[in-house]
Image (cartoon, rainbow, N blue to C red; front, side):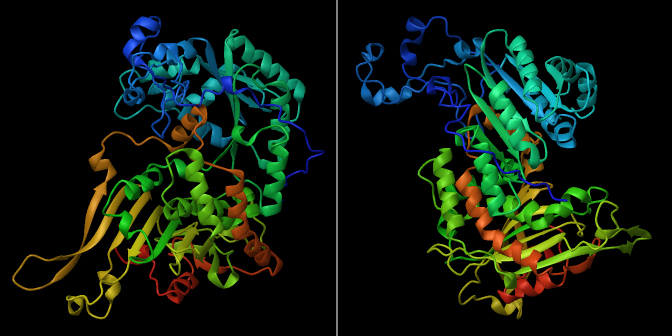
Length: 587
């Protein structure tokens, strides 16, 4: 049975976790006048081994004095044109008098063990966490501190390029990890957690981050208890909320309304880990900082854009959760749609979180809701391959035998604005396919009056330039171009201009959760989802989802390990598109 969002009892007049601006440490960490820093602030020192910056490049925890120069006695003698170039780093003073407390709610679950604790350790290993920090695990499971440490130590790894002091770092990190067992709806148990946090914080100003690694039906209970009994009294309190954010527009809006009884929008960090992936982060850099791409980024040169997500495994014993949501809710409505919005947005005013999210919302609001005729759904079935038998989706013991939940979906979406009018944006996501891959493929238009079209025969698609951003695995960016094969004849070949990350950047790429956790600590919201953004996303998919469920439309079956249902090819052909990942090569 699907997890349900329980309606709130009554609206609240104010947020329990709203604090004065002087406790907000997410402002730029610089203030002016470094010329006289040694005279005015002799106690301020630079710490080379610790200097938190967000993934946006802005330092953490600072007081901005922009616009505050006039009349300031400390600013005398500094020319106006020089003011922006002088800074004081006040991080050490703030850090010495504050602590960071991170509570992982649902600490005994798979996500916490496999992703959250390893990401926190990676941040600690690379000196991204402040000097004064503590981590608490909270769950119903009865564990001691030592049992928690033993549990998470099995999943901790060190960076591949820095192994010398790995064991020492791991031991130091585990000493900062503690555990408190309690019910998710018990204010008394959260009050006990608060007492333990205060003991570790030792009277310093406390900044608290709660990571909700729990089912959505208990989000509100936890937030209520944490806000009333375990929020910071003199610093900031933030809450990271994992997807799913509801099952449709109505349940998502109800969840948001309930959370906002106890939190402000600025305290809610709705995490979509795909936004923290390196290639997704690089998408805007590639477009906005390279003159060669920005002029091409429109309907004038781009024929179609494809967002492809495929896994080479099925649910395999974990179908209980998946059957309540399906591939559209699990992947397309969040991961792929978020990447689409980043890809298609107009140039933001700045790299500020609100400016970027404003542009993403504009894209989502310019799109028309999906219709059934533009969607294909499928479900994998059992298959024998290479002497091995692969089970079908309904062969999973955790899945109902009559389930029609889709494990595959393909859809065509359109953006009704001047830049993208008429360009099909195709999404495809599925489980138990022929390979694991997540990528963005940009297929450009044919060259008008191509002098070499005779060399390509009748299939001009083979001559189409294509930009590919491979998000995972083996991160890469490559551009398919047409090239003459060396020799006396005129034979053309399709070649790649290739940036393979593992060849160009030998250091290990940080996990998406590391980047997102660091940004949440810094108060950087650029990679998190705003409530109106969430509403706009659900409005595109809710009518389709309701129609699929009301009409009980059966998915097209496809063999485990195949390229998916045949219907996906017909959908692409309807808009004169060929799926880029089916070209026969293994790029």
